[in-house]
Image (cartoon, rainbow, N blue to C red; front, side):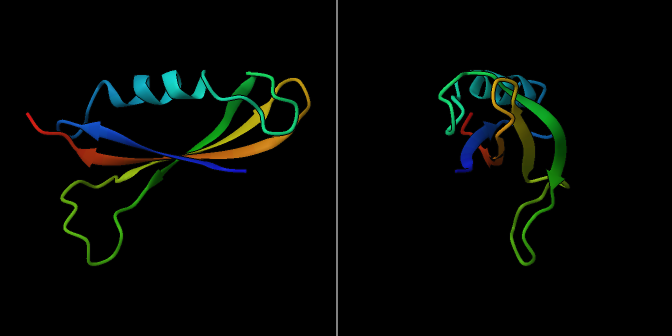
Length: 85
């Protein structure tokens, strides 16, 4: 099981976006053992989709995570959206 979330941002860079990602990550339980011990191992910036009207160089983040209890690996994707002001 992989997870995907949208993170509203007010501009780029958004200093709150990473904090929101870690807040969400802290609430996720491992799908294999149900422990809330997922830890990020690698983070990748997502490029905008070709042909999209996204005006920023990064459209989100993909985190490769691993459960510290059982070792199960999970991908968590965060896609940025523009929030209203």
